[in-house]
Length: 78
Image (cartoon, one colour):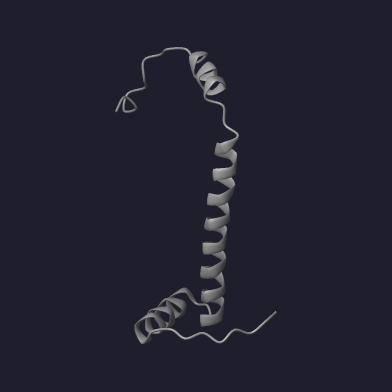
């Protein structure tokens, strides 16, 4: 594990302190979790972009064309 010195605006620090106390975790745990969530979101975005590049519109339409036409269940028609 490594240490990181971090400068935060007072308002951000105050919010982190309040939220971490409310959640019952240390400030360090809260920040580590928040950074991990951000990394995960960015990596997921990159992954989806790469998958989208491999997409084939003709194959997609072929699959959609094979779906039978049915009346939507009540509430799903919107």
